Image 1 (cartoon, rainbow, N blue to C red):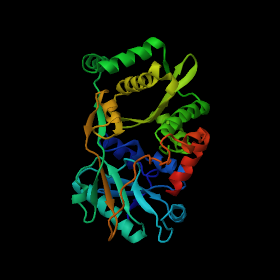
Image 2: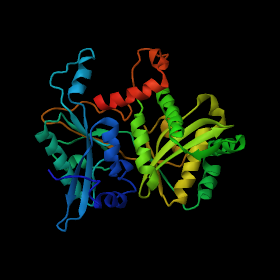
Image 3: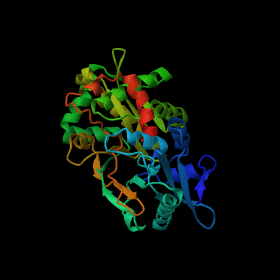
Image 4: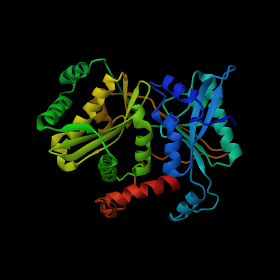
Length: 366
C-alpha cells in the first residue's frame, strides 16, 4: 500500500494548494497529520497516487478511530457489546479523495477499500464534495448528506455590501448594528486569548447538545498553521469583554468558517456578524475566492443563516464501505447527545472546562 509521509514529501502541500477551491480543505494539509496525532493519539494514514514521472496526482488522508477503547465504550451502552469491536477508517472531516482526474480518484478509493479488507478495519467512511465515488469502486455506498454552503467572493468587499443592502436587508441591518454598537474584532494574541475563544466555542456547542472538537486540536492547529496564514482566530470585543470568536482555516483559494461561538447575553450587539465580516474582508484582501460555511440541511435555520451571507448550496456526500455487510448510519460531524431531558438537565450543568476535556476523550474513543 503506497502510504505517504506528507511532512517529508515536498509535493504534498503543493498538490493540496493546487487542488483547492472546491474539494481540497485545510484538513488535507501535511500539518494536520501532527495535529491529529498530538490531539487524538493517532496520526492519519496518507494514501497517494503518482504518475510515471513520480509526480503526485492524488492523495487521501484517513483517520483510524476506536479499537479496544471503542469496544469498551460500546459495552457501556445498554444493548451494545464490546465483542468484535474493531477500529474503523474515515476521512479527516471533509478531507475526501483529491485527484487530478477520475483515474487518480478511483485508485485512491481502491487503495482505501483494500486497506479495510487487509487491515482488519470494520468499515470506511468518507465525507467529501466529490460526486460519483460510488461508481468507481464496487461495494462503496453513497449516503445522502446535507449540502455544503459556498459564497463566491468578489475582489472588492464593497460589492458584497452593496448586494446585501439590496438583497439581504436583515444581514445589512445586523452588520450596521454591530458597527454602531462598537464591537471590535481583533486576532488572538496569546494562548490565553485562544482559550477565551475556545470557551465561547464550547459553550455554543453545549447549547446545541453537541460534542466540540478538543482543546488540543484547536491549540495545535493554531500553533502549526497560523504562521503560514492558514489558520486565523478572531475575537469580538465589546467594552473590553470577549463576546464572540471564530476560527477559520484556508487552503489555496478556499477559506473555511470552521468553529465559532458567542455570548447569548450579547446577541443584541450582533458580535458574530462583526467577526464574520472581518473574516470575509481578510479573505478578500488575501486573494481568497470562496468562503466555505460548512454543511447544513437545505431547509433549516442554519442553512438559511448561511444563505443570507450569499452562500449557495452545493452537493456534499458521504460514502461508506463495509465488507460483506451494510454499514451503520454515518455519525454527524459533531454528534448530538441525547440528555433524556428536553430542558437540558445534566448536560447544561457540565462545566465548560470539563466539556472541553471530555471532547478529547470522546474523539479518541469513538
